[in-house]
Image 1 (cartoon, rainbow, N blue to C red):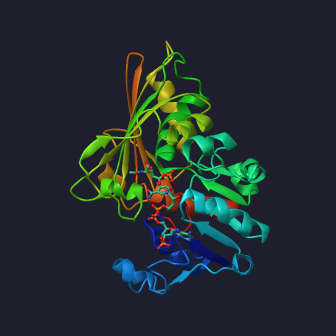
Image 2: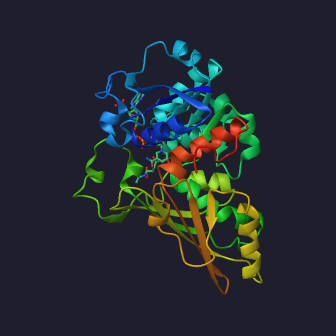
Length: 335
Ligand SMILES: NC(=O)C1=CN([C@@H]2O[C@H](COP(=O)(O)OP(=O)(O)OC[C@H]3O[C@@H](n4cnc5c(N)ncnc54)[C@H](OP(=O)(O)O)[C@@H]3O)[C@@H](O)[C@H]2O)C=CC1
Ligand SMILES: CC(=O)N[C@@H](CCC(=O)OP(=O)(O)O)C(=O)O
């Protein structure tokens, strides 16, 4: 059993991790941590999430001052913390031979200036940025197996890239027209802490981050292709639905498109391709899947993808990456 810690365990993705890892046959959950001054320290996690009662009753502990000693007790740590917090924690755990699965954006893009521009802090660890592997599980298995620092892909970037990668690697898209990604996320995407924009009476359906959301460069960097990305906040709790419009090269057939998706995902059980109909939030919420369907008319293609932002978009994909890293079946403990 691998001794495992979760930091940020009282948050939405941290609680999902706690649930998955408790049931996982190969990870032993040894500690759930929150910040040193957290209002939730010393509470059983099931006091905050009653659905975890009798499933996970470990208490949330305040992160100690001596992080090096904590790191030495574990084989791996899942960082379900804000970007700036993960940025500081990852090097400490890595220095103590503890593998790091980071759910934040702190190590996803190997360009220090990207962090100043989009995250508002100066990245201090360019050596680790260079070593980190991007945790888009279906596409980066070989690299994930080799790395001790996995930067789990973001929620919108996961569904967007799973929809576009098969078309790009098979060179089916017209390069003159940028793929346009319109995606709607449930409010849990913003995390558990209170804020006006995510409060019940404020949320309806609106775009945000237009032309400047940090996931636009994350997606473009890892696709190797510019895209237009507009996120929207919807009035539901969890799930992301992405509708992507792109242009195919002249003479590309529906059969070629179909074959590209089948080839990419036929042995990837967490991506479900539809033969008819389109994905919905309802089909994927509380599941580790990303569902994908497409339609073609002339040179136009519309691809629709859906996932649970807290699972395939975060915690489930983090465990999928950990399974890959340790040589287990990628879906172990997930389905
Ligand atoms: N929500 C989502 O859909 C997705 C989130 N992510 C990423 O995952 C990470 C976690 O997100 P989410 O679960 O939504 O966040 P939440 O805001 O729900 O939870 C954050 C957690 O971190 C803890 N925390 C805050 N400050 C510190 C600190 N200094 N040291 C240790 N723990 C701390 C909080 O507890 P306390 O404040 O009480 O200490 C809480 O447990 C973020 O980086 C986010 O970008 C990625 C993909 C999807
Ligand atoms: C609805 C909402 O606010 N969503 C968040 C994205 C989720 C998240 O936490 O971002 P990462 O996937 O990069 O970690 C946002 O737009 O900032």
